[in-house]
Length: 408
Ligand code: AMP
Image (tube, rainbow, N blue to C red; front, top):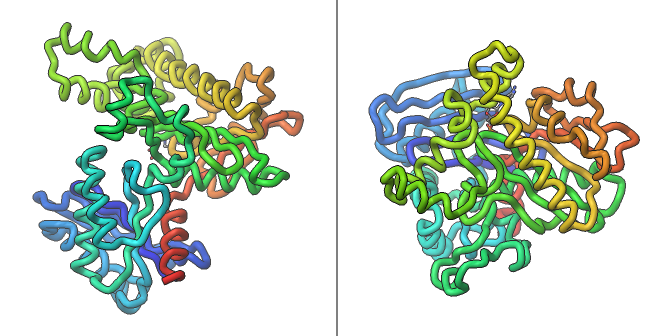
């Protein structure tokens, strides 16, 4: 089944055309600057290996979708004859609140509930709604399915998702841990479970999705027991520009000392912290690692080491803590931009963890870079298997969409 996977941002729209039976991606691309000057589409036809960039005004997501369909059906750059060959559309939705615990067919009722999710993730939800409307305008009879980043984490018990705040905040505002990157944690934990020689129900896996945004999950028996992100994607480990977990009393302290509003502190914690905040020069782990590799003579060396050491320390704490709550650990998985590519970080995290049963194979770890398939990076003697598994959130979205649409 040909599934068009759509990831709509406020001024962007990413897409992939995936055959859900063969897992082949025949085209993918990105519409940028939607609703702004200089909007453009970058389209790749992956079967023929062709690429095209085209500037064209796009006043909204419906205009963007028209261009996507134009390129997917283009005589030269396309891969389908007409849009009737797209059997369904699967949308990546960042926040499903407590309304959605699994992927769902888009209906009027579902859209009304998604509207309520604006409360939790205003910018993302508004963008998703625009993406859905854009698809409705362009392909009104094509079924659409919503796949939520929060859904996989809905198996957490109240002890894991509740904050010890006045209970009425949970009742009034839905204030609780939701967790994010769910499709990624779901994909890599399922792949890891297949690699372990035991029934899924018996598996205890920690998945580390480490990219520009990062989160760690404890997945026991195929179900999430806990995850590091919280009410918002700001919580958990240090990220590119996000601070992760801090003492909450720091917020009023900074507001007072720096004369900032709540919105301004929120901005500092989301956009000016993490690797960027510590190093003062970059949120990109490649820049940070280059300073480390350059050695102590590099002016950025010390801060770069500190930025990576903070993340290493936090990841060790999460892995150890999650092994404790699962009462054991079979495997640790690294995924996403940094997890898949940074042997430096993986080595730092997995060193001095023998007591927990983790023994890294340093050579295998060095070689695990830009992989298209899973790679084992632990020694054969390691009690805990450590793997690098390239994530594939789009495939999860395509598969869920196909499953729901096939049952119609
Ligand atoms: P993501 O959010 O998953 O796209 O990941 C983005 C992060 O991955 C950025 O910090 C990149 O610097 C990092 N990244 C991508 N490729 C590499 C690499 N080859 N080595 C280290 N970090 C990388």
